Length: 195
Image (cartoon, rainbow, N blue to C red; front, side, top):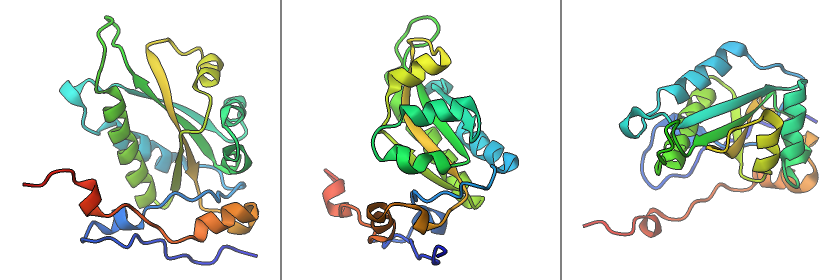
């Protein structure tokens, strides 16, 4: 059985760019397709050019291609059902926040800026026909040990990136999550004050 063409366009309350409405976070990755290195480089370049406070760029990325020991190590650091599907992704990327600079000064905005960089990466990847799924369910200390990461760097998110795969490759409960209606809290409940 092959994956049907799914319309995953977000039912937005107001118009947004098509690329933003169409972006979603699938769990079905093609386990056979290697990463297109040009598309990967473009996604990382988009992250590099995202805005940051005082141009501090407090982000780093650990990039692991499927088949490498690093990819297997990052997959092993994933928690629960993330281990079931994420290993099929052509690339696993750990998004790392630089929480303290080299001189020991805290970057209080590091997580915010890292989030912007990952958003830029995600939109560029989607534009180029790749799919991205971000995960908080992993053991940061296991990743830290895996790559010998300095204490001032905080592994924050693992990103699965690659080609869309067959939904039938997922366990039934995850297939249902892939096809469930997309929802978000209403904008009226998101904006706290709007004078």
